[in-house]
Amino acid sequence: DAGVIQSPRHEVTEMGQEVTLRCKPISGHDYLFWYRQTMMRGLELLIYFNNNVPIDDSGMPEDRFSAKMPNASFSTLKIQPSEPRDSAVYFCASSGAEGRGHLHFGNGTRLTVT
Amino acid sequence: EDKVVQSPLSLVVHEGDTVTLNCSYEVTNFRSLLWYKQEKKAPTFLFMLTSSGIEKKSGRLSSILDKKELFSILNITATQTGDSAVYLCAVEARYAGGTSYGKLTFGQGTILTVHP
Image (tube, rainbow over all chains, first blue to last red; front, side, top):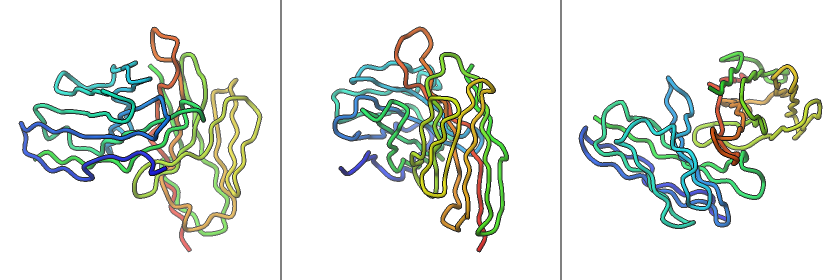
């Protein structure tokens, strides 16, 4: 298996622009997570899905953030409008039969908002 | 609010040394504690612990959980330069108001540097 695939690897955008991050989980995994990592706050859970249904979005910072999972093999995280404080590495992760806590992370998207 | 605290925040050792990394937690509806290793990119899974007192081992790494004291340690013996990384501890809990598990709260990590 190719593992969790995220795109793009790097994204540089100007404040106010819309940003869309993409994720393809491991086939057969029924949980998908979006995390954000910064030096100051570490790894923070933004939202997670079970069988394509959002279970907990309490970590989404504000209404500028939205996430969708239209099918079992694809998810997006959108930020509109983006702000400099959104600059971070965004990780997508999935888990399955090994246990929900056993996450397989993608390589992340490094977002820079200027 | 669930909380995970790791110590020390950073550690510098020489090859061959043994290190112990600590993780304490406060969580409602605990399910499991996990250790991850993060090098340049994504965290990679090391261990999942659910029962107290049962050691998990993988090569030179081992970990144990104490559910009474809300504590876990990760030991690395005969350290090598390839062990240099950030080690993350996380706890899995049931999400508020529901019956489904899967919500992970991560600690801030321990930065381990192993010099040759």
